[in-house]
Length: 123
Image (cartoon, rainbow, N blue to C red; front, side, top):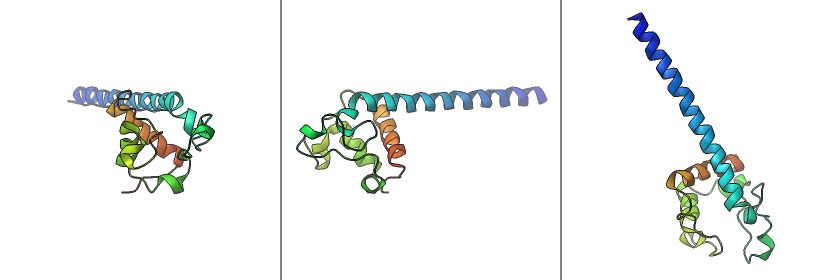
């Protein structure tokens, strides 16, 4: 019985480490995706001042602003990422990424944006 408990504990411990590794990998992938698809307009710090921002007719959202981001639900942020700005009554200049990013990657991107703004979304 003692041996079984030790094996079970070791298995739970290993599963915990694997889950942490998956979480770390997902966070890293979200950062990579942000750098690949978002920084051109939103900037490396998420302030909406990316290299393409001056050429746009609308200022990109400031992802670093808790004031701007906390009024948005996670679902509306995910919808904007997946379907583009027009899907959430915003600029058509925000392209859809649903054909590029998976549902899981979009969910991880929303989590990354919450880290950037240091805020939670509207419930």
